[in-house]
Amino acid sequence: MSPTHTGGTAGATAVPADLDPCGREDHPDCGIRDVLDRIGDKWSVLVIVELAGGPRRFRELQRAIDGISQRMLTLTVRRLERDGLVLRTVYPTVPARVDYRLTGTGAGLTHLVKALAEWSLTHRAAIAEARSRYDRAHPGHDIR
Image (tube, rainbow, N blue to C red):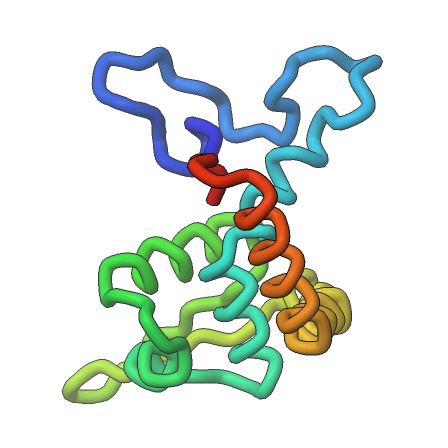
């Protein structure tokens, strides 16, 4: 991911939070790469799919998304919130209740993300078979 997602590394020069990672106006993927890095991330896709069904509390999201750690879910929803795709709402109760929901922009992604998820389910067996054929034809490779 780009430094705009992670905040950079220690000692690195700060990168402005814009959508132009390559800095060249004539470059065809300027702005696209940064957005696709976010919405193409496996955890982001799963969070968006889950939130497409309506608001969820943190633990509901964590239970629904198999294999995601608390830390990774926290980072994912914060990144999606920063990008304006998810809205985090804190309710003034004791203890405080927090839920997450898609914004209008995030909701606009749901049909695309759901289509990708459905495509993945439909083609996973064919992809697994293609991988097996490749692995048999190229023993010792390190492609994963």
